[in-house]
Length: 231
Image (cartoon, rainbow, N blue to C red; front, side, top):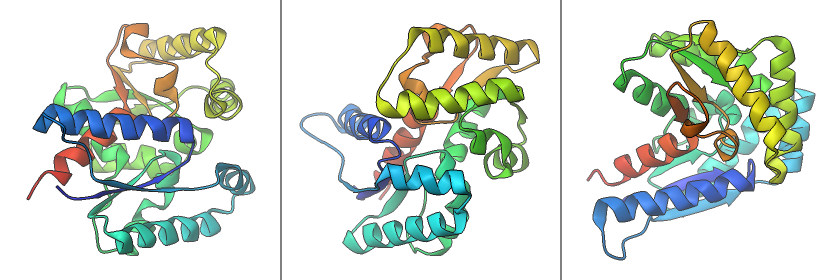
């Protein structure tokens, strides 16, 4: 089993989910007392969030590359960035290391296409919903049509992610608002919904809506285990 390197802490609430899912998946596949070999580099998220607001992406790229290299040096055989937004610098991180980076959007797209869907709604931070690094990968590499909420709805999602979910706050009113946004996207033609922020699955589950929901945290972690178990 390869050791899985995790760049986490963005936020630590969702990184806990990664750890749980990795270990549950290894146990599911191997049985007994088996658990995941993993290494975690956990960032100080306040600093990351401030740099995001400032648009200091070049500095953040350096931070991610440094963390990735430390994990590789420590023995990681593959790498996860435990945040959708920070995949903005995924290509640069991959170029800076010799172990494979498992891209979260690829894991999501694989699951979407496995269900035969061609159009998805995307929920995430404003950076993920509005910039091309994520939408463009889903569309260009995987041929998916990607729909995003309108500007006012994107503002609401951004606020809930950073002011509630990243602080461990689960609010029923926010859940209702997210469900309403999802229903709006389905009316526009979304056949499924990609939860493109690792905190959103803490609030929204497949039981909450009528269309398929793709939990990127779970899909990413399970894909990592699949690759880690390949000899």
